[in-house]
Amino acid sequence: MTLAAGLTYFGDKLGVDLSIAAIVAFGVRIFNNLGAIRRHYL
Image 1 (cartoon, one colour):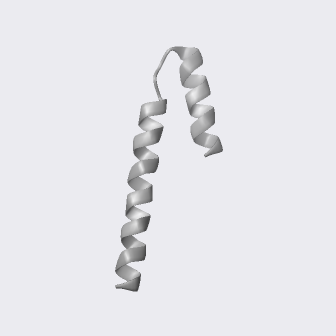
Image 2 (tube, rainbow, N blue to C red):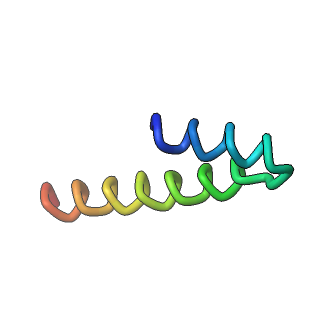
Image 3 (cartoon, rainbow, N blue to C red):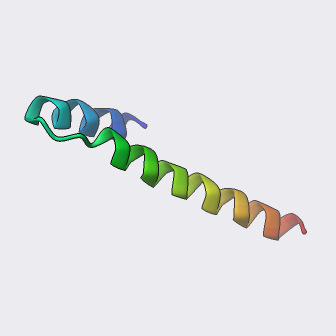
């Protein structure tokens, strides 16, 4: 989470919108983890 915040901060300073990329990347990881947990218990 700290890395994503840092990338967003530096991206904002450089004029690049990295917050959307960070949100998408973490969203994909969360859904992958939830899928793995579901497969483990079911």
